[in-house]
Length: 382
Image (cartoon, rainbow, N blue to C red; front, side, top):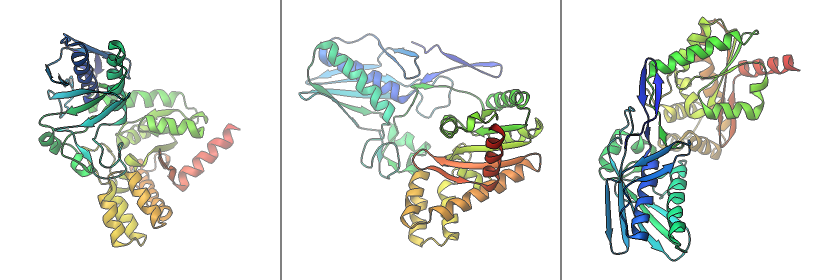
């Protein structure tokens, strides 16, 4: 059953797919239904967090003793996903106690470093997929009138080998792949189409901004942060630029914006401190190296530098800096470096400022230029 959802990419229509989390939830539902009813389901269906239904035929069903297993084949659509075509298995056992317990088996990685979606020692099955799996299985338990719960084990045969083509080893996820997905859906799009879309949005924003003001942010995290601080209500249009920071700044110059504020999660924008203007992990991932270099310049110990290099996330880096009371100087240094690089890219075409935040720690760095712009905009808005 092909997943018939498409998005436009330039002049092409690209077919969407579904995530490993969706596959795991479907497989868990299939295994639970087989175990509870003894009947082999011909199809499995769920509604993803995005709201799109996914219906598939199970690739395999097995029932032996008190355990049932079901496999669903990953379909990434037209996205070049490393997990495309792999089988995602779920095995289900019933338990007397209520609740759905979820763990990983063959080919699913284990978290070995703090700062990730799951705690150290847990299977690398992220929060949203866990919720999807639990809800799918609980639906089957309720339909069958089972008063207890279930244990679910998710496996991806071949996942340990395929994980070498991902960032899992660098993040501290060992032994396999991660089960991911926040929307349940994979939406492919070419880089050219994304930049073209950003260009159109910036052109429209230029017409809607008589003051020549603009706020750029990579994505949803930035938009939420701007709304929480009221920065989206200062008369400057907000445009999401994804990973294409440099291209967005270039287009802003071409559209003759006079003031540009760049606000984003530190996990992306810290890369600007190294002059990296495309923040996708495929292009470069020097986050911990930058933290280490600026921490060393601030007098960090060799032990802290080694720990920063081994940290799995930027939030984990901030936590390490806090232990030695170095957060303020290191973040100030990183912010200043990022500011310097965006000013160099702007080449005098407009005034620019940068602000970095974290969902965990809030505002982490704000350049003098960013503070000045925000103060001016707030004053003009009163």
